[in-house]
Structures are given as structure tokens and as C-alpha cells.
Length: 323
Ligand code: PBG
Image 1 (cartoon, rainbow, N blue to C red):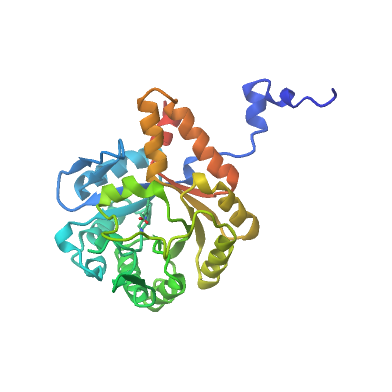
Image 2: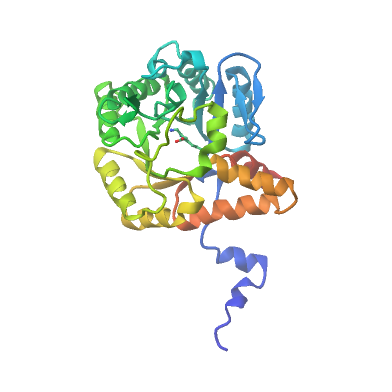
């Protein structure tokens, strides 16, 4: 044998030297949940160690995450039921506590990067990402609402708009609304290939945002499809997306790879709530090692081709670098 691959694995220094994919804090985006009020740190049963925070305590939490080196955050609002309506009016109402909180976070941490979610579901009494008319999710009537929501978020100081609704044409409509309002520097990270997945359950618990009827299969993608992701990516890029996202991450590593190989636009992946919850559940039972499983998952998403990863593991990963 003149070729023995094990020679490049014989000690840690050599393994580290030839390591192909790397994972650093610069790759991670930390999703956090915000709730109206003060002094609130509410547990979410299906998302261990992740909380719904009121803004006062969220500022402290962000402070400790910034100390650990996490610079980018995705903020999701938990809206009380009585403030929801069919057309998600609260999403762009200046009285929306979310918009005020964004302003406050940017004032407190000017160097932070904040991402938002753009879709009707947290604000919608129907729990759908688009407007529901006669039991159908209507595309074109949803677009102006998404545009208003995006402009309100940009005005509050959001750096990266994250349309997660999967309506056709929304990236273009949002881009021109932002530009018309003067927010030419606000980025769009589009949820490009977002699948109708069983792994969003804990997130919907966190926001109480599950659809009141039906499912999301007329707008989110069929888990069996890959070629369709190329169509979605091409459209989003043509419409002005700065980054394209695949969601969830782990069942769709091939899709991440496909988009990375085919487009020059940076690719990100959302390591979603159900993926995080599974690792917690199994490690609580003593069936897997939490940190090892976390590292392997995040590294596999990088290896597949993701530049950035949205992950609930962000703080634990940052902590593991210090420990
Ligand atoms: C809402 C949205 C969802 C997630 C992010 N934005 C849920 C959904 O589409 O039903 C899921 C994130 C996660 O599970 O961590 N448009």
C-alpha cells in the first residue's frame, strides 16, 4: 500500500491541518423569541434552554451572547391572540412592540446585525403565512402586506429582511418597496427552498402560530423535490435576494449543496427547532452526547455548502469554545 489515508488522521494536529470544512461563530445566526411586557423569561417546553424574553431581559441575554462573540440575531415576536387578525395588521403598526424592541436593541448594540422574519403567521388569526380567502392562501393580495411589514422592520433598524412566507414574487415586491422607501442598504435573505416540514413544531409552540386549519403545502415545498429548488433560487436571485436559504437543514443537505454548486449568491441554512429539540431529547435520555452531536450537525451543514447557519445551538456552540 503506498496510499494510506489513515496517515492524515494520525494525530490531532495533522487532522486539524487537513480539515476541509470549518465552523466559527461568524457563520452563526441566533434565533431569539420576544414577548411583550417586562421581566419575562418564559420557558418553551419543546425548546429546552430557549426562552420567550421581554425586551428588558432580552437586552441582557444579547449582552451575554455578544460577550461570547455572537454578532447576528434573528428576532421572532410572540403575539397575543387578541392582537391577531386576518390580515396581520399588527405586523406594520407603529405600536407593535416588536418594532420598538428592534429600535431599542440597535440603540443599545450599534454593532449588532439583526434579521427579521417576514410572513403573516405570527400576526395572523388564521396562522398562515399568507392571507386566507375562502380557505385558500391567496398569493398576490399577500404581497403588499409583506412589503409593508418589511418597510416597517427596515425603518425600525432591521439589517436583513427574512421573507419566510414562500409566496411567489415576494422578494421582488419587497426589494422595490424597500428601495422606494429609501432602504437600499437593507439586505434580503430569502427563505428560498423552504419545505413543508414536520420539524417546525417547537417553533410553532414558541409563537403559538400553528395554522388554524389545513397545512402549508400549497406554498411550502414538497420534501421530495430538488429541481424545484433551482427554480426558486433563480427567481429569488433575479428578484434581488442577497442570500438564499434552505430550510430545514439536515434532511436537505443535498439541496444546500445543489444551490451552492449552481449559484454564486451566498447560501444559508436554517437548522430548525425540531432538529434542535431532537438532540436535546436524545441527550436527556443519555442516548447521545449533546456537544458532539451539535458539532457534527453544524459541521455537516457547513460541509454541504452553507455559508451561514441559523441555529438554536448558537449560544451553546459559543460557550463550548470558551469551556
Ligand atoms: C414562519 C416561520 C416558521 C419557521 C420560521 N419562520 C414556521 C413555519 O413556517 O410554520 C420555523 C423555524 C423553526 O422551526 O425553527 N413563517
